[in-house]
Amino acid sequence: MPKTAGGKKWVSEQACVYMAHTCNLACVYCQHPPDGRRQDPAAWAARLKKRGVKAVSLEGGGEPTANPDFFAWIRALKKSGVRQIMLSTNAVVLADEAFCARACKAVDFFTVNFPSHRPEVYARITRSVKFPLALQGLLNLARLGAGDRLRLFHIVSAFNYKHLPAFALWAAKNFPAASVSLVFVQNKGRALSAGGAVPRYSQAAPYIKAALARLKLGGCRAAVQNVPLCALNNFEGFAFEFQRWRRGDAALEASLEPKAPARQCSLCTLEPACCGARQDYLDAHGKRELKASRKDPASIIPERF
Ligand code: SF4
Ligand code: SF4
Image 1: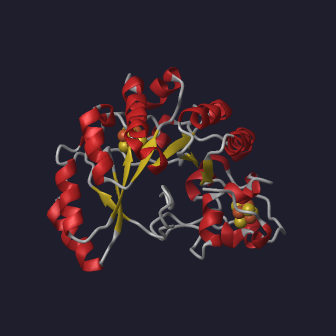
Image 2: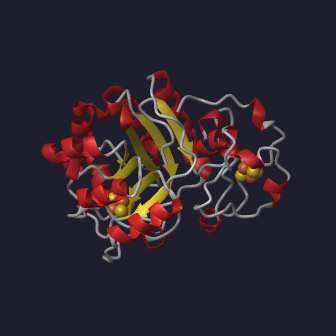
């Protein structure tokens, strides 16, 4: 979840509103593939009002903007007292300029799942020919003044990790006001059946670090998510979970799957500030890469995000 953008304050928790029921892409590693079941906006609005929820994130299984009632949902949520709306989207529908302009008024933050700046890699991952539409959606957001309310959500998988440094240069050049999250893929949903979607931390880490360095040098806000601190030596300050810990939150949001227990982690001083490895990763690659540290997490300097 993005916690800062456009000068707004850090948000510790957002309620996820599962308003999507279908998708216009078919990503090979989709972790929550759509099941076609429609949700009731009035029922969601009533629940959120009862809980006094003020910040929500619109997401899936599926693509929220593929829901024909997208703006009716937003109206219902705002009526229930929601004040801050983050949209998690693949940006394909935002290629429609009129839709994008309306969305820019209705939505506070945009998290755009954009898995590659290279059309052939994008096509392989999303199993679609919609690269030009997604790119146009991103360009529309920037042109309509939402560039600083934009987070590029780049899932790091076996299909794209070697392109990360080039992606970083591309992002810094074309979307300098955006923040960039490099999010390590989870071995769930379609990723399980695809097989081979999850690289080892040790394979991807050099590329992740090179990308983070390029983003920083390019003036972009950047973070890495779902990668343990022991895989990020000297780049720990970019870890999203470390940043949460530093602000006084738990490293992992309550709604997320917990860290898998590991002996190395029980001996590690970085544990409170680290995402650890999740069971889905250990099922794919085991625990051998984890290395207990004696570093004081308070000594790590946070990067700008
Ligand atoms: S990852 Fe997102 S964009 Fe891709 S198929 Fe799943 S819901 Fe759709
Ligand atoms: S050993 Fe465990 S707690 Fe320590 S940095 Fe690695 S994954 Fe995190």
